Image (cartoon, rainbow, N blue to C red; front, side):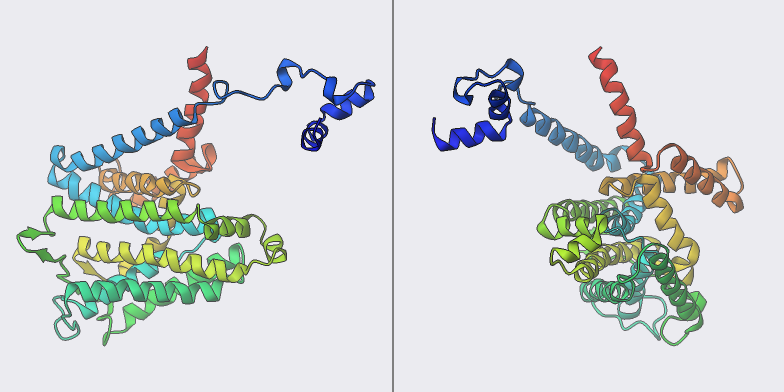
Amino acid sequence: MSANKWRHAMSTGGGAAAARKGRSPATMVPSPGDRPQTAAMRPDRRGLAHAKLLRYAIVLAALLVYPWIASSFFTFQIGAQSLILGIIALSLAFLAGYGGMVSLSQMTIAGIAGYVMAIFGHSAVSQISMEWPWWLASVLAVLLAVGTATLIGIVSVRTDGIYTIMITLAIGVAMFYLTQQNYTVFNGFQGFSSIFPPQLGTLNLRDPVPFYYLSLLFALLSYAAVKYIVRTPFGIALQGTRDNARRMRALGFNVAAHRVAAHAFAGLLAGIGGVLLVWYNARISPGTIGTSALINILIIAVIGGLRHPLGAFIGALAFVLLQNFAIDLIDRERFNLIIGGAFLLILVFSPDGLLGLWHRVRGLLRPARKQ
């Protein structure tokens, strides 16, 4: 018996059991339960991968066909708005779900991108807007959003828990009052209006269907980017800092640098969402980044499920549907009552959000199907 076979037999426990019975590991015959699984006995991973790809293909096909079977209202007001809010909520879900950092400043970062589009691009406030080309203003908006998110990360990453929430909330409130009281740069409480998406040749992005596809494109890119990032060494290390920051420091990782980089990436997502949001609303004002807007992004992310990138878009869809149709059941002034009630119900019955609830129901149905 070779040395390699001997070490393998001893490490699997067969050698020790044989030694206790006075037999040599070389003469021991493994029982059926100790035999390694053959390829036929292993789970069909290829079949599972094909099933997952099939689900993705079905969802993508439904999203592409949706504008052609839905009205303009559902295409623009429901579909596009859900995708845009989903992108902003995805930035929070990435920070909280994979980095363990709950930030209430993601809507503030999106609002900064929107204000940059209004100030450097075209708007009805011609005395302030500089009327740069839309592509240059949008690139600058996203870059400033990333820079702002990086600065917020530098300030907040050395705290944890409630302190991070309070710091980011304070930054959001400060930005709200700055835009409301400053008329020279931000035009005060009136804000900016007539901020429209560009027209590319004969394609008018102001129309519901083209704007929906524009929002869908960036939503898919944002989702794919998060799914890729969390599987990279950086993403794995970030999840390690979420689970045990002290141990990651002991292993030689720079925890603060990883968290700041996560804030920068989340700022990129929020900046893209902010540009799309200001095009969607065709205006921006301090109310866009008010306290209620900051909390709404948190509600969207939690309703969908913070641990799943897809949960941000599911939560955004649920939020937009409630926002548009709640007035049929209750007064518009009491909309927050419905949102708060739905939020509490989901937290009680499924802390992992609607997507987590779906996974639980599907797990309960599987044994019933096998029987």
